[in-house]
Image 1 (cartoon, rainbow, N blue to C red):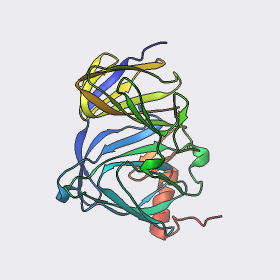
Image 2: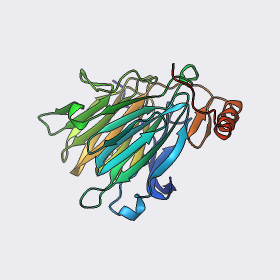
Image 3: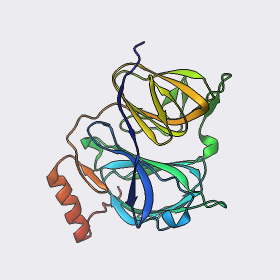
Image 4: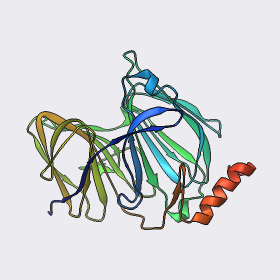
Length: 280
């Protein structure tokens, strides 16, 4: 096995999105993180920083993956879907040819709203496929507890033969929520063809030899395994990997296409009212 290097180590930065939601952006780069586009960390204990939410807005050509740890997110869309995801739940939305939706976060009894949204790109052949949802409740996400204190929630992909419930995704992403107890070290196999990153959401530790703490992003270089050693308080992190799509990216706001012409067409259709496509 070849241990991956750390290609980039950085901290997420504060940004304001939606109707005034204060969050931290770990990255927003379609080249370095291909097939991933963006990771937002919307953990907050201050309701005024998130209650304005993300009112009605369009998406096309990509996927959004929302993972909630505390509080709830109410969602609705142009197809008539309505629902709520809560602690431990995941919503995987494939925007495809186009959807208009809203996401409104609500805090728990203590005012906490903790969650993450990851964007994944779609290859050209799937940009205009019909939209769809995969909504997975916490109880349906496999959780592996090992004797050394390691805990792994398998959202998508496979970990040591255990498969996550999210499937049929273009980039075949692996998406895990891992916790290691104090001082523990774990070697995690990651296929060498995959782009991989980790995002620390609690505690601290060493990732392939580099120290990282809460809200740190680690982009790994080439290799086929990642080594993580937890600090004195343990460490919790998200680990994602996917096979690069390696296609041109034309990206503006909530629309991700392959060419500038396709982008112009999408926004022209929004103005004309022809953005949403008939479902076959």
